[in-house]
Length: 415
Image 1 (spheres, rainbow, N blue to C red):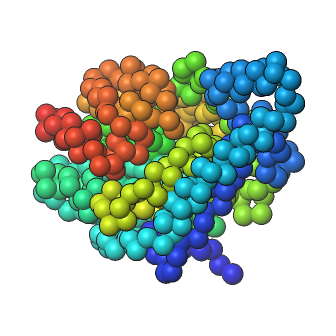
Image 2 (image 1 turned 180 degrees about the horizontal axis):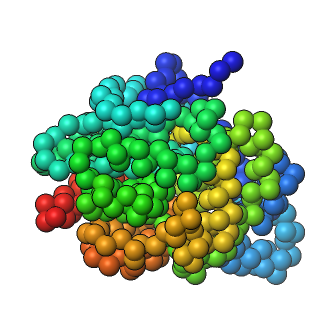
Image 3 (image 1 turned 90 degrees about the horizontal axis):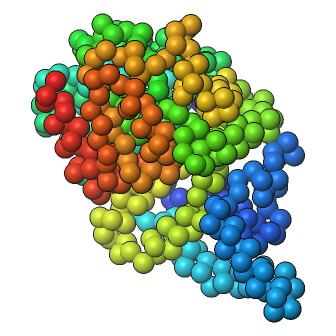
């Protein structure tokens, strides 16, 4: 059977399946809280208490309760029993939320705009608009349509009305060729050729991991880039009090992930989603409990479903890129140490001599603000905007227009 080609978003029929990572994250959260056995992971992975520990505050609270139980003459197992009893009550609400999500009638209906360039599984989508061109570069591990989530929450469909031609680079599903790609192949190859095909010098705007790719691309082709925007973009992966521990923990998972990547040459979607879910395993249950209380017919409920569908509609990451990101970015902090090179060229925000914009969400759990600020501080002609919201909410949430879209557009108009 040939390689699977998936260009647009996943279109489902019938009830949504329960994503695997939701169950895994919940089991790991329970294991971290109660010291009960976690789910079965590949043997090369670290054990559940060390691989992704609960927060220091959570550990302190657990230790305090265990000490109080011991002082009162209770066995340590009493803590696990009490937590399980509490979870049994709370998880009825979580299960209700999951069931409501699975049966919600919302479906993505927006059609993709025309592609003005394509190579392999990648396309450059043209959302139209008159005026200077802005090319958005998303992450390699999520679908590009987070920037075109729903008609009311689509930066791609809002920006043309503000006087800008809006383009989106959809990296696509990695086929047989892309599964051998390194970061250099994506940047010095595919991104450079997309820039060459774009209408005139563009404002290059990278989101999340895409910001790192956009920065490297802009440094290589300054003749094709008139300004640079980094949106929720990590840089110093060891920044912040918990940065080194969290980053090195992620890098330490690589040996176990090798067994998953061997059959297909890529890190599977479920493994990627599980890693993201483990950043906040307790948050999974909390958000579905909250969703169970929403009016299913409300705009807020539809936005929740749209975001969850996007989160669960992931893309495998080519194995060479996964190794570079986990070992090089997270483990060795190569960007923050100015040791990351693309085709031999050091990638350094200070080397960009044009206008720049850094949009940093103040409540980002995926890219800690300290990590993103490290890049902003090195931009020579940069404007830094601290946005109210989280990593996804800043670009696609209910408050995204005020949090990012309008400030970003105001900066574009000053160019």
